[in-house]
Image 1: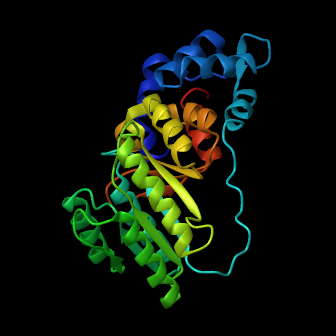
Image 2 (image 1 turned 120 degrees about the vertical axis):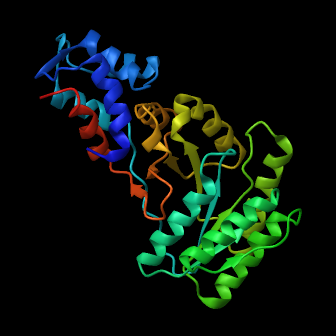
Amino acid sequence: MFDFFKKTAQAIRSVAPKKENTVSKELLEEILLEADVTYECVEEIIYYLPPSNHVKREPLRKVLLSYFIEQKAKPLNDQKPFVELIFGVNGAGKTTTIAKLAYKYKNEGKSVLLSAADTFRAAAIEQLKRWAQKIDIPIVATKQGHDPSAVAYDAINSAKAKGIDNVIIDTAGRLHTQSNLAKELQKIVRICNKAKENAPDRKVLVLDGTQGNSAINQAHAFNEMIGIDALIVTKLDGTAKGGAIFSIAKEIQKPILYLGVGEDKNQLEIFDKEKFVDALLDEIFV
């Protein structure tokens, strides 16, 4: 079992301490709700199961897997760099996630450039600088209060000139209800496209897994604002709300790329839907 799934597993065992070959639909409903799957989602899961009240592992596994969509492969494009815009609300673990992502790319043999376009807080710039130094990756940064879209523009142009493979752009942690910051994010997207056609190549929303299903409203708002290509869910090591991932996947209909499961630079796990579903089912069935 994944280490990050321990608290969710404990929540499941509090409802169903004994594993069986089958479970009743009533007990399954309790289990899923305890793991923070929304009631609407639970009702849908129950609906698509066979009519018998005795639920077996494989039919349930098939239904649960259907909630996750695969990431579509990007068309082959030799034009460097691959530009990723990372965004999310305050406290979601965005900056740490960027560092983990950069470190992963570096270990894959790719060159990476960070862009500190969160100029809203001086501390955010310094935090990303410290990470850049720690993992030995170059960074384009400026001072607090400077135009964040200009920082993104400079980073993309610098990466183009140097033949760098990946640019990862940090943005101000923002509440999805703050219209001024929303306009700023939209401007960054427009300026990225001026620096490189069709950039950003991927717009990634970082969601705090400890918020459970409240993260869905954030995701809807950001999707309306600039569009979302993919998700990264963080802090799952510290929550019993692992089941919220099913609701998030159903509502947002975007691929989950990674799970953040700790503070270390190595603690970014590729999201494997089959392993995730099996980890849940292993707590229910013999």
